[in-house]
Length: 164
Image (cartoon, rainbow, N blue to C red):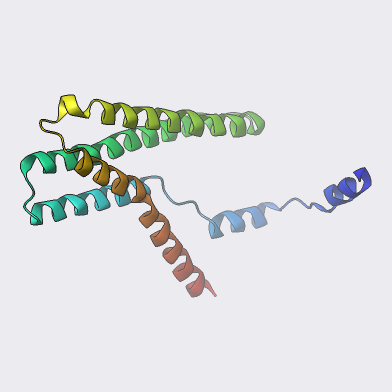
């Protein structure tokens, strides 16, 4: 068994600088602000639907609070992650990879905590809170990041088709 593992390790060939650069160019990461834009767009669309349906003011306020309960923590998480990434890039590679994982873990935890806290204090912030409206828009906004992945996938397919 150990011999098989040793044989597999010997077959791994590191990439040259040009190969690594080509691989990075081909598989560019999606900018972190794109999912935020997608979530904002979906939340705005939900609010517009509520306005067109002429929902009562307390329902619209609840919807807005639900959207903000998703978006404010997401913006803070993204900003914190980007700020930490700039610092992490100056660290040695082994330390940077561990610090990067920890950064994601910590900021995602902060985001979940802030969203939960905002939802829990909603009755004190919104007069005549409509829990249903708030939670529906919150869930729609949270799931809105899938739009970013769908559009990014379409963009990548279009770019790879033009390259070939």
